[in-house]
Image 1 (tube, helix red, strand yellow):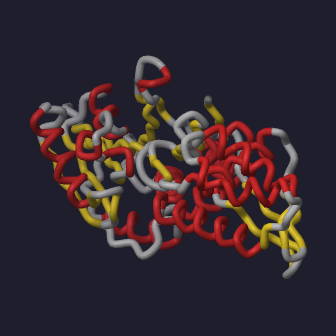
Image 2: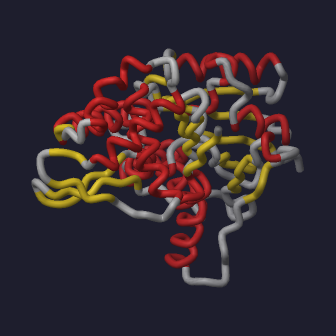
Image 3: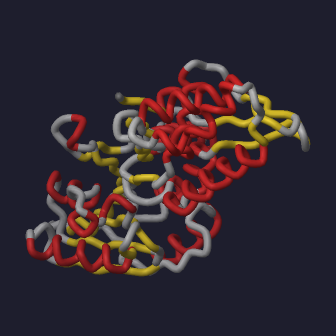
Length: 321
């Protein structure tokens, strides 16, 4: 009996490929690694940099057909109000998969490397539910990124030795951790990227973000800012970071240099304004609540005495020179 192999996948930010001036994303890489008869692309309309998901889907469909990766390619838009809401995603994803032909003639595989962490969790929930054919349950794969060596599709195995709820929790926790990208700060160029997304910060904003990134890497935790002004030590760090990354922009830091020299104080409102602008740019660039909570400069505490810091773990932040 001939078994039809069908690949299901959400379209993620890394799947725009050449459309965004990048290499092939996870979906095309998965198809390079393994033959499928059919591909079904699921997507939600939103912006990806200067383009949109609908354009990325059209690009993918053409690429799959032109490269003859599959005989049949189709796409389905799932309109989501929140791409991080497990309940909404699961409800709409299950409604879609309920309409698929499910028998012992089709093997469905879900590629979970694309999409938000919440989408990957929902694929696991579907696989765990057993809501596919008895002979061919939903198969899950992750794609090993080619930049880490020869790429291949890695099967995600759900542990059968533990109760279902514990099994699901462990697998979800592992996948969510693996899928959070790394933030990289390039000191020489004065730029920051989270995964493959460039965050367009101004020089002074970059220096502020570096300050809190250095605290994460040195295990210093959040820092308390109180009163009406920031400390001279903080101003000195920002000045040195600015001088190191932007040596030609000396006029931009001249006021800061004079204030440090004269032991003058810098109002905390200026600091708070920079933090707000940094977080807004991260939010707009990532469009992902999980990543925002990981990489934004968090603010906790009461008025007049608040703690600022980045929640990301040290292995998720890299500073290169």
